[in-house]
Length: 230
Image 1 (cartoon, one colour):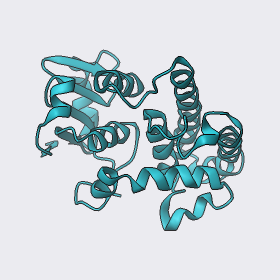
Image 2 (cartoon, one colour):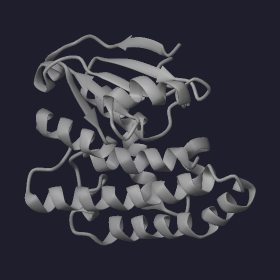
Image 3 (cartoon, rainbow, N blue to C red):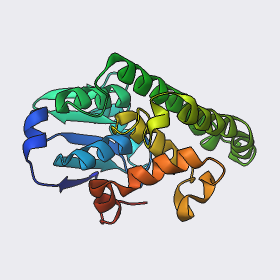
Image 4 (tube, helix red, strand yellow):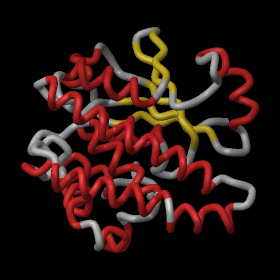
C-alpha cells in the first residue's frame, strides 16, 4: 500500500492556493520531479498530504489509480479541491501564480526564470535517460563527462553573464523563483550538492545558488527533519 502522511498545518499559504493539496509521487527518497513540488510547498509553508508509491507497487497503481487521474499515467499528480493537476513544471508555475511569488514580477524576469528552468528540464531528461538505462555502467559515466559537464558550464556562464543573474544569488537576482528549485533539484539528484557541494567546486556561481537554496529557513528546516529522505 502507498504510504500517506500529512505535513504541516494549514495557514495563509493554503488559503492562497485554495486548500490542502495532495501529492502523488514515487517513494524515491527526496529526489525527482515530484520532489521539486514538495520543495515549493515546504518553502512556502503550505501544508500538504504526501502519498508515496514504492517502485514495486507503482506499476499496478499506474494502470489503475494513476491512469484514472492522469491519461498519460505519469506522476507527480497534485489534487486540490477536486481538481487534478499534472505536469510537474506546469504545477510549479500554477502555484507560483496563485502565491504571487516564485516566478518574477516583470516580463523579463518571468522569461529568464522560464528559460533557465527549460535548460534544467533538458538536463534532467538526459540524466534520467542515462541513469536508468539498462547499460547504466556505460551510459551514465559518459553522461557525466559529456552532457552533464556541458549543462554545468552553460549554467555557470548564464549565471555570471546575464544581467539579472549577475545580481545574484538566484536566477533573476535576489528574488527566489521556481527555476532555482528546479535547478537545485537536478544538481541534488546528480549528487553534486552532497559532501559540502563537492561536485560544484568548479562552478562557484552554481554552488552559490545551491547553498542559498539550502540556507533558506524553511528549506533548512525541511532538510533537517525526518520528512527529508536524502
